Length: 91
Image (spheres, rainbow, N blue to C red):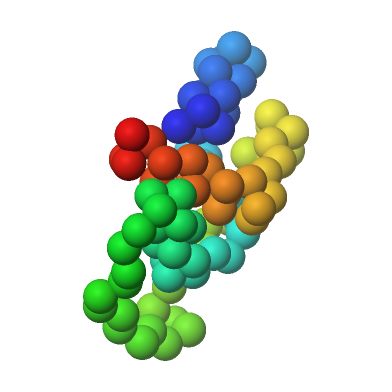
């Protein structure tokens, strides 16, 4: 949420108009996101997993966003945030 809020603040402050993909532009499997949330939560397991084909997922391109507001994020930052969410759920 902090990153999304920061992106929106920058777009509003620069008075930018248009359509933007608010994405990381980093391929991360849903499985990895869920595992990170569970790890932060401290317990639990994934009880259902469907094998997806490569074409069953998509990645939003955020080059336009990066160009306008100099946005940058890493896969590690995203997964760390997922662990943070897990810890908050377990609070």
